[in-house]
Length: 236
Image 1 (cartoon, helix red, strand yellow):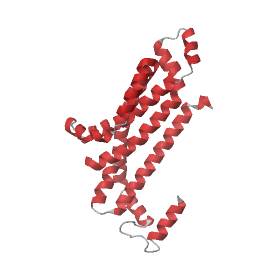
Image 2 (cartoon, rainbow, N blue to C red):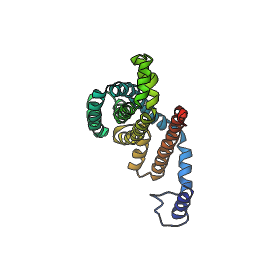
Image 3 (cartoon, one colour):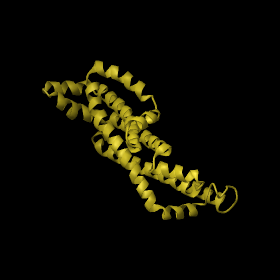
Image 4 (cartoon, rainbow, N blue to C red):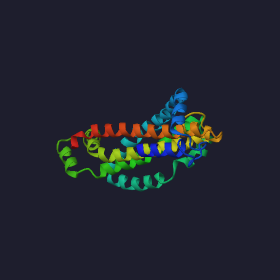
């Protein structure tokens, strides 16, 4: 990171290797960030709000559904192929239909994030349930554990590792799709910020937006990994 910053400074501020209009020096970019901080925070809030709505909705639906489908071997095997097929379709292709059917572009964005997250989480949950050690399930049955308790008190904790794999995939894809969707037709969010200023040739703000998006994704991924390690601490 430091090496990249030094090379960027040398190539832009200390020499004419890079066109300063396209690649402003780091100092200018930082000044622009300070000037636009309030606007950037509003756009970050808009983007994270959409991510939270679509992603959490996907978790609430996909995890219980994945537990139920995975617990039934026949349903689980059939649903695996269906989820692979539907999950292979890029959610961004649904944007034109969303625009035609949903009232606002924000609801379209939430819908796209939901689809982007739902299939990886569902697949990860079903895979986790199907791979639970049968001895754990048999032991719970011997103790006459009810179906609800079996799913959420026995199978869910045993499946968390693979569920988190699906959650990580869904979160990563969600950020990529949200930025793409915001560049298409939104009037807020970091994708809109980047697209709007790049259209006007304001590359200082364009680079600020790109860097902010990268920082936000890294911070969210770090916090998510901390949560994962906390919930899986019993496996250490």
